Amino acid sequence: MDAPSRADDAEAKPGPLRIGTRGSQLARAQTGQMIERIRGLGHAAEEVRIATRGDIRQDVPIARIGDDGVFVRELERSLLEHRIDAAVHSLKDLPTATTPGLDLVCIPERAVPFDVLVSRDGGGLRELPPGATVGTASIRRRVQLQALRPDLTIVPIRGNVDSRLGRVDDGSLDAVMLAAAGLSRLGHEGRISEILQPPDFWPAVAQGALVIQIRTDDDRMRQLLQPLDHPGTHLAAVAERALLAALAGGCLAPIGSWGRFESDGQLHLGGRVLAVEHAAATSVTAAASAPVDTVEAAALLGRQVASALLDQGAGPMLELMRHGIPDETDGERG
Image 1: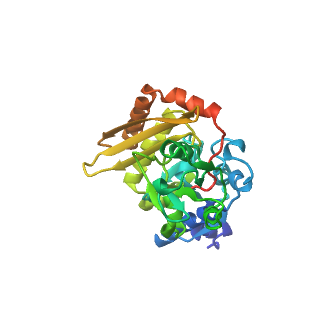
Image 2: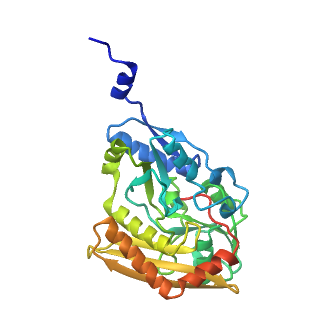
Image 3: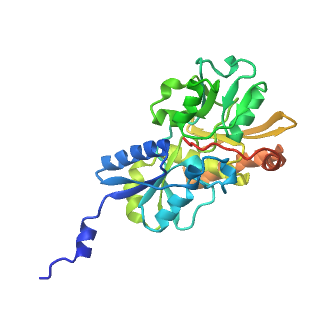
């Protein structure tokens, strides 16, 4: 009887699953958490770091680097070229248009989806003194800050979470705005001064959610990752992203949304579109709910809320923001 070939042996004893990640501190932390969960299912897995345009170019606003996929395109290319078996992303980084040949198959349970304020003295947004400096480069956060506190001085900043917190610690800023999920994943929950949430402050679409992306034809990875998927989070994220797509907004647009299942068993989805004109912040908000148990039903709910926003004038507001405000956005996603 012939001895097994090397190819047969490799198929029988596959190496560790190669899980791709950006090289940022936060990306590696959240990918590490996913790798531990994969190992908990009994599979060997290892991290593969991949540099993205958004990480390399820290000297310019994100939108000037390219489109709204600056944190994901290199990871997707690595997947398509079989250099990795899966990629872990912050879901809010991903464009709503799917990449041919790739699927978003696993969305684990979401962390806290809201933005937070970290201030030097521990006070909340309303306790900041007039003219206080607040660091954020996100258009969505900036417009909502202007609506609540038009007297504040908004300072555009990029960099990782620790460098942003350092700007508060060294006194160069009075406060910074960050994602609650990012702080939690890095063990910095104790730095939070205030959690900001609807109806006053809306998070980015899919904020706080991670997603694992694989090749469409990789049935083994699809089956392997299925136990890590959280149906409630998955459906809420689909609804939010359908809302964003229907508004023709990328992840750089000043659009907020939040979907969640409540005690009535229905998916409740809200959305907000923001704009600034003549230094005054404006917004429109809409919400709806439905008994959702399929991806198709979730996407329909998202489109319904988007339609209600458009009926209120969201389209001209988005055009105004695309052409009338500096194109900065955050560089450390969570």
